Length: 213
Image 1 (tube, rainbow, N blue to C red):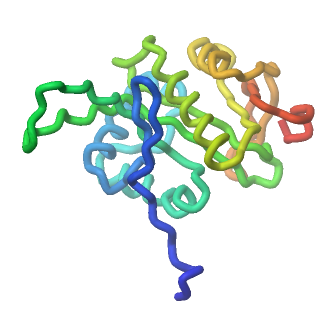
Image 2: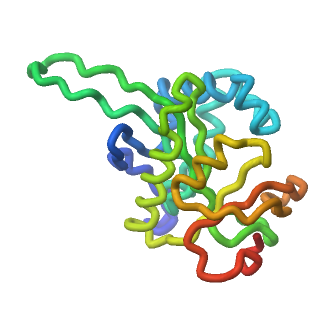
């Protein structure tokens, strides 16, 4: 195997910060992160909002599913990012003191679809655990990831999708500067039927139809 054929590794030092949050690559080797994913994807609200999703009953299954995305995530940046609360500063911390445990609250995604009829720009997604709803974390995390892709990866055109009855996601997309284009039919993957969803965009330089939206 040549060096050009080597599978790229995740730079786990990546740290995207916002006023209250820290965002980094979702690490399938982290037991805590895998357990958190299992906890969230098995909640009624996640199942209802994602059409059931892929069954993920335990840590091992989560690790296997997440590991499949790592080469592409490491190479392109497209994939899942874990979101955690920024630790509270402690004035009296001493060398050797235990650090506060990391509090994971959800994840954000940036996906690039590869179906021949799929949209030609990446789309952002967000999932916040129910106990952290209604605190503005989804828009803060999404805004931080968008800024990272704009400033560090040179991408300035984005899409976002949600169901017509998902008012929370609509408000989040609106807060981070997306424009609503109404219900449209989108081809998300070669293995799934086209779906009618609310289409939102940010930064488009042309009409949505020119991006297969």
